[in-house]
Image 1 (spheres, rainbow, N blue to C red):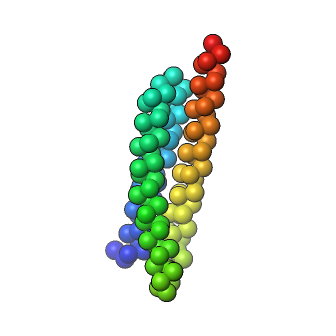
Image 2: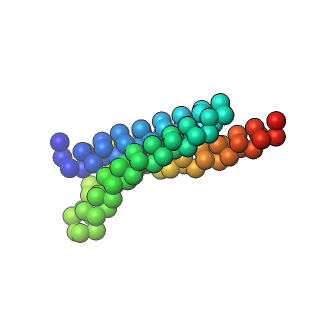
Length: 105
């Protein structure tokens, strides 16, 4: 497997796991389990960083004069990276909303 394909699959795998953790965090917050939600965000962040590291290696390769070929797989992996980041932001907002709603009860 080429370096590009390997980096893309690592990126997709890691940020996919991060997205799952962020969604699980929302589900835990919905149940009122805010400590567990915080743990899931942290777990997701660890996976996200691993994925981001794969992406950064491609950027470093390009910056050092070795062009990275744009492929559908690369575009897909970058899309997954951006969606994971968006889901994390939304998860944090929803967790805050659940906390506020539960404090009003």
